[in-house]
Image (cartoon, rainbow, N blue to C red; front, side, top):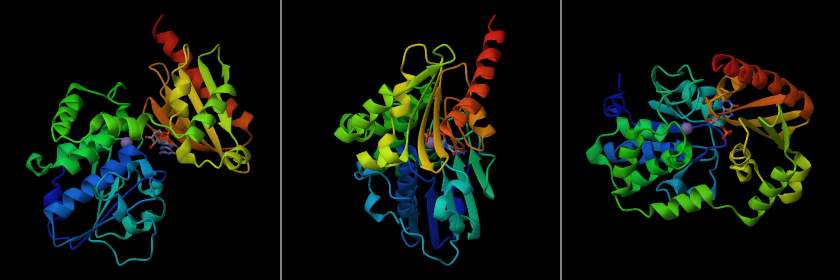
Length: 323
Ligand code: 5GP
Ligand code: MN
């Protein structure tokens, strides 16, 4: 059943919104889109977004400058939204969600069982922004809101390329660009464009990648020391794993960056043969069938060996069912 945003927030004086740590385009678009929408619907309510500081490429989205990236103690919110995330991936905003009078969870991750009193989880929908579009009253859309939701859609569908793109996604995208924002520039600047440094690091990680399982799998890793040397943060590494996935013959791409002594953040992308959400879930992470992640401990080789077992299993299962 659809969630009635206006009804659920009707009496609220203070509304909070947050999304997952290391926010991506869908997360930022969804938080700022909902912020714009609820601020418009409820001018006398205080609506706030709490989010780890997003990349500056998103600064054109209305509300970017109003994002709270500090998380002081607050009186409980009347309503708090967790978007594109489970409660335990909200980072420092988790405490607001837990204490809120009403907890609402809107997400499209298949690994999310729903963590609010009210849950709108639709794993077959390509982005949280597309979900929000469905929940918003169409006549309340304007140019700024359209742009925010469009950013989320293009980021999570790879500019309408991935299999999570449906005819309905395209119809919604069409309606959004009818508001007249500069979408070619938005796509270029938020999705494709890299800084020179990001391109250099991308080049290095591609150069150092290793193929295994007869080329069906590829892995690359960047350690702390190298990240410090280039002065790059995790958000500078967005796109590396997609580039690995683009290599001919690759069914599953893995990219890892070091987060601590013997600790790595793992990103995976796959084609139809491997469900990486299942692989990631096995190691305590989650995501989507074709894009997922987790945090792993051990040496780089331990991590790759452990992942490899599950990926090989998935490839075998796929081969057996396609004889
Ligand atoms: P990325 O590889 O771009 O960081 O993430 C790919 C997808 O997997 C995203 O939808 C992201 O939210 C999800 N994801 C990445 N890492 C984790 C994780 O550690 N836990 C969970 N539950 N999801 C993750
Ligand atoms: Mn998303």
